[in-house]
Image (cartoon, rainbow, N blue to C red; front, side):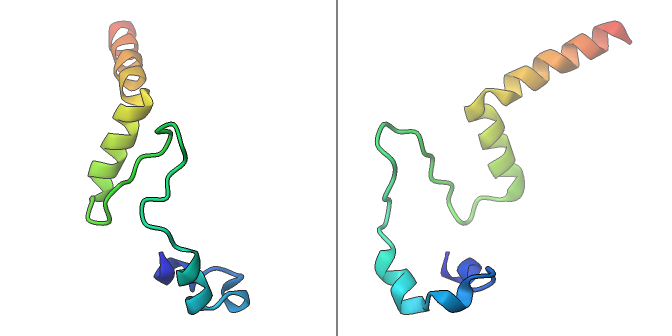
Length: 71
């Protein structure tokens, strides 16, 4: 989080100490609308998880079945 923040256009406006003071571990929105993806999750794992949890994987499977049937 901190490393990514230093590459943003507004990095000079907020220092590391101030940024760290804002951080709250596992400060998620109420109602379970957020998912924490571990830092060690690979790109493939992350994409698969997002697709599955959002329902897009099922839609892609359905669309692929439709395309297969029409080709």
